[in-house]
Length: 202
Image 1 (cartoon, helix red, strand yellow):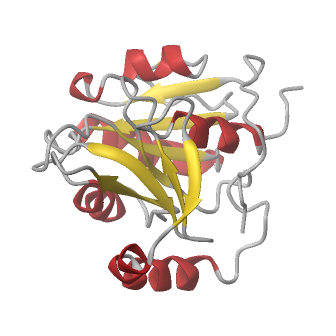
Image 2: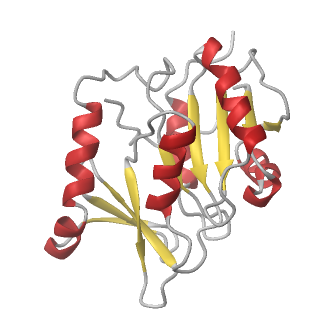
C-alpha cells in the first residue's frame, strides 16, 4: 500500500485535470495543485482529481465523467472539499463516492476542534495526527480515545488495502478520498504527496 509520507514537492509538470460541480470549488483546487478544470474526460492525463462538496452531493455530470475515465485507468483522487461546520461529514461523502463512483479508500479521517470545525487529520495507517491548527502543521501520535474512535474505520481500511502493493494508486487501481480545506491548509500536503507518487510526464 502506498504511504505518501515523504516531503511534498508538487511538480507542475504533471498533467492534472480537475472535475466537479462548481459547489466543490474545482477551480480553486486546480489552482492549488497546478491542474486544469475540465468538463470532458481527459485521456491524456497523469491524474484526475474529483472534487465533491458533501453539502451538495455529486451531480450526474461528474458521475458520468468518472465512468468515462474507467476505460483509461487513470489515477484518481477524490477530494472532499467544503468541510466547514458539523453538518458536513467527510465519512458520509466518502460513502456516497463509493456508491456512485467506485469503492474509495479513506487513508485519513477528519478530527474536529471544540467548536466543531475541522482542525486535524488522523492517518489510519499509523495513527499519526496532523494538526493544522499550528503553523506549520505538527504531527503527533494519537491518544487512546482517538484510537478507539477510528478503530472500525482503520480495520476497514486495512481490509481494503491488504492485497494492494505500493503502485496501486499510480496504476489507477485504488481511489483515495482525502478531506481538504484550502483555507486552513487541511489535506493540501497529503494531496501533494500522492501527486509525488505518480511517474513524471514523458
